[in-house]
Length: 207
Ligand code: SF4
Image 1 (spheres, rainbow, N blue to C red):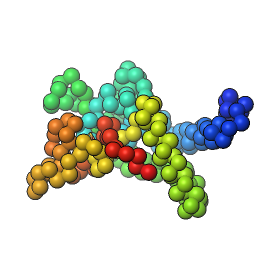
Image 2 (cartoon, rainbow, N blue to C red):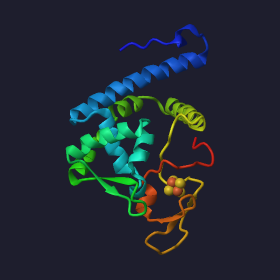
Image 3 (cartoon, rainbow, N blue to C red):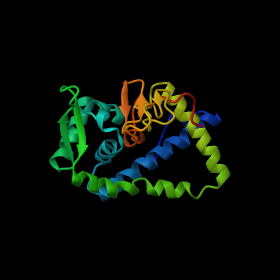
């Protein structure tokens, strides 16, 4: 598919880079669609499964999934219903708040996620062809762009706890849940701290 955009009429370097990013987004969309279809999933179903797999279990709710996908609650429920029907995801009420529906993978869902481990490999292989200096410059530039879009509220970035301003590492040494999140006032196991959180708040740009 060819992209047409008003960037064509603007001569600035920012417009040229913006056009390149639009073309890349189109290519990434086509690649992820092809990779998901190979596994019998739509791209959004693949994203939903990966959200459940990599998000802290107590945050893997329908509402957070809708935010992560950038869709309405109703649309997120529609995506989940397909995954539930295929026996890949289960819904349970949160023990802390019965109004919140938490999501978890079934063994069949875990198996599909294993097969999704190569999701995005075509893009990774293309990037690996860049030299070290180009890769470093790209990483720095894209990191700054992601930071700026995140600050503008148009991009959500979920990350593990380390580097988050709310994270207190080893707040309870020797306990099974040694870390603490000051935002949600909760102790966390090492495994929980390593899973992604949509409320991750870095103190400064990572790059
Ligand atoms: S807000 Fe920060 S510290 Fe708290 S769970 Fe999320 S990433 Fe971890």
